[in-house]
Image 1: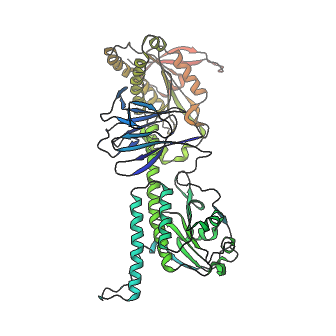
Image 2 (image 1 turned 120 degrees about the vertical axis):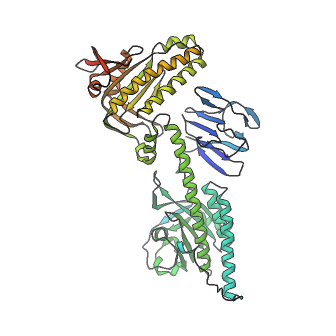
Image 3 (image 1 turned 90 degrees about the vertical axis):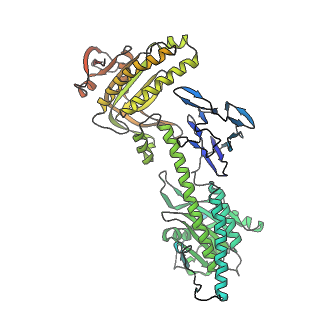
Length: 558
């Protein structure tokens, strides 16, 4: 399975990535309503877009308004050459204004969570009972700890000078870390920087950064940790690092109690007696500090020393805890940035098919995206252009596409205005559902009002199209209300939100029997929409798999 990403480096130096999904559209520009926003005055408000099918990703200069493609002013360059349109291949470098966009494709067996870059066979965990508490410090006190230096004297004691130097070292390292925050949006890069700072500021011989797994909605799984950065001080320790085992007893205590632990001479420490990870590796001193913010513990930073005659100090504990706390803030920022990026892409994609309030509900409740369905009462609307095949045969393909885009845009806006969900486009036809994902008592009425509005809007649209040399367009519409299975149907790799069942099939049959300009509804829908519009009963319709003919009505909308 191919993992397709677009790495963006803005003119400011800010770098981030977006995962590109098949059968999607991503708009690029300076305006805030784009999927990919570039903070660059040389970039047009709506500069370009990427469209994809199941396999290819095509970059197109410009954007569509009313079915018309408007090119950008400042153009775009791919691998140094100007292009208006190009199917992207691995390694393509795109320049838009002063921003660089790199198209990356990698083959993966399984896509790992975005917040976790697993390093296989690097870290193992073992579980042993935990005894009494060793030396520890609250992570929330590290940065805010008050200095003991007297302000009443112009002279500092040797102890005070030592503390000042230690504080200065911590501040210097944290300042360097803060510079990384503004330029790196890659978790692996951030943790590599953090481990490097720990090596420079402490005698740690091995450092491991472990990030907690989380659910789709962002809930931290406290005891499920994955390594994101594993480093040793020198080549001699690399072999031991490959077989590194970490005590889950320590990591769980750190995360649960939100403390940093310093274990001096761990092999003889009563609280960790029997802990194989410490005993077998000959570790004399360990530090484990939480990646903590005000809202969450995102994981731990684990450091150790293997020299049997060397230990960590209280100062080392404070420095590692401070680096861990600063790193945690960065982790939270990166997670929030990626979450917002995913939501913006999802919002852009789903907004094409659903009203804004429905999109918000789906984003607020990620569980609603899971495969599966429920049975509920809905009203299904089918609409189809009459005589479209003949029209297609006599017009140029690009002209037909412009016509369809104009038509679908107008019809979709009406469906959304009445609270409907656009299920799908079917050639020159469309299917909409009213009553899912959210239902109300007015769904049948909303569906019928939407159908009438569509027919009336088509009269206006025909006047516009006639001036552009298009023939008049007529549509037949069918509606039926009943129970259907609603939900995400398909596979884990690809699914769509849709409705299936006899209700859908009957609505489709009604549409197939409707002439151009007609709205045909079932007796069920008619009873739920009494006195809304004049209705004329039609000859009953015989439908396959139904014992009784279906009573139907024509809605008079003029």
